Image 1 (cartoon, rainbow, N blue to C red):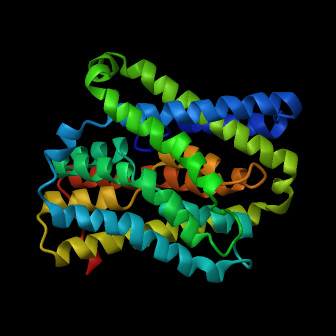
Image 2 (cartoon, helix red, strand yellow):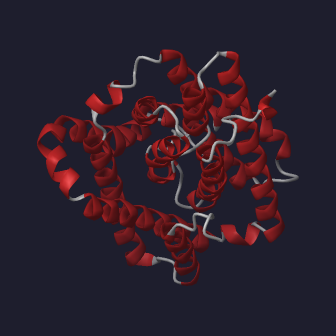
Length: 326
């Protein structure tokens, strides 16, 4: 059990789901929670912008082939695999769960865990900092656009002038403001990391509670059986396996060193729940966003379990990418 990363934050997320199911926000309380969620999303992206250091990121920017592989995996391979999974609907996945799978596939890579696992396994840490950071910066713009493309036929996301302005106001402007103010805020944020982590995670818990409350009130859970959820887990495990093998094989074909192969795998195979959840709250209707979030939340925990074990093995001297990718 000591090897399994049972993050207390995941337990907090599960507890939030239970509270939202038993005591969903209704009426005027739901209206207040919605306003608070909007403000929390703006704060999150402001902190993301202020936290990402351009100097640290650019230190690993020279390995352009590695970064191109990571971005291709994150924003090309994942969406293509998501579109290919359309054959699973509706026999395996409900329309809402499939929409969530598609959204998962256009979310950027994680920052903290990608860098942490890369460091633990002996990978190229400066390159991981750049790839993960740039993925999130690019994702602020690319994720809403790709979501509009891959979800165009589902009716879940519709882009209009109003929705574009909402995305700019809630995501892009706070992020840009954070980047602009980073020279003055960077030192203070470095001294108060624990407080900022609590703000980050508390804001995301609020997003989850509001989203799942709306789903409960709309009755979406009555349309999802335990069998469907097990099937979703199987689909997510297969998705992660395919991406891990694909990034491993591509890194070997490109002749990357062991540290660079490790970086490509960890940065190219993960998806950011911290960035994805607030984006989903902006892009999807309150009635559907609860189930749309579920694939991303499950995939997040699955990637932590698998990548933690891979990092542990490679740190102990195991083959960086077993010649299993052949």
